[in-house]
Image (cartoon, rainbow, N blue to C red; front, side, top):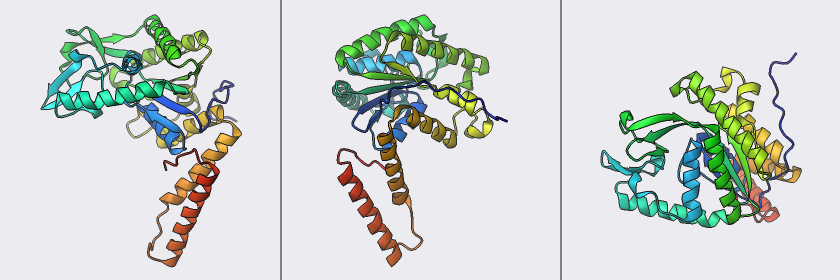
Amino acid sequence: MKFTTPVTIPQYAKLFTHQLNILSFGSCFADRIGNKLKAAGFHSITNPLGISYNPISIKKLLTYCINNASLDSTGYLMHNDIVSHFDLHSQHNQLNTNILKTSTTEIISSIHDYLHNTDLLILTLGSAIVYKHKTLDTIVNNCHKVAQDQFEKVLLSVDEVVENYNTLFATLRKVNPTMQIILTVSPVRHLRHGAIMNNRSKARLLLICEQLEQSHSYAHYFPAYELMIDELRDYRFMADDMVHPSSQATEYIWDTFVESFCDDETKQIIKEVNAISKLKHHRPFFPESSQAEAFEQKVASTIKAFEAKYPDITLNT
């Protein structure tokens, strides 16, 4: 008797090794997987310009980085003495415009350089529902609590996004001809718009990923959304808000991700990194005891042996 509906995972090439440079853009779920990559010893940068849920804003952020361009000058706004930008997540808010310009210019310049050496780009699409600023006539990444009557809510069409991403992918491959791309749809539900709109939005994102994967041999779709909706079809795998996956669900999707994309050697390194992480996070009851001192020496020698064995891998645990 089965109590789940298993998702058939495509047979991927073993794309991941610890020698790769990885870059991720997208939703808050991209942050979760990005943190997992970093903790596992991969050289990974995630959402350098902040979380972005819709594919058009993700493309815009990447385009800034590709062109090493300044943020759109019309996108700055001030609210309660805090400066924001419509293309950025609120985590980048600053006390004045010059500080925001300086900080984002540095990030964009850094990612511009990194893109030339990026082996793997992971794009996690969260929602096809976007807000278009009526006056600026542009899709925003974040409304920053501006009155809703200044925006028009739009459900993106599949053709519109595919056309945008065909252009984006072509540009990325000119910058870096060997770059591989992984596409995934975030399993986080956007219920603010209701269950029906969320499902229509996710359906469009799934079709977008299908068309892009079929059109580009270097694009690969990973079914994070399907794993959550089918294999983990139970509210016990949801966080308390009933919207985000629980930590257990995230761990399950991550384990499937590793199993799908990593060869045996890479999986062994991840196991060793995880073991070191557990050792480092162990807290003895009596830190001043000889037993605790011996344990600390064991941790230090384990780390030293790992670094000697894998000199190119940085422990981020």
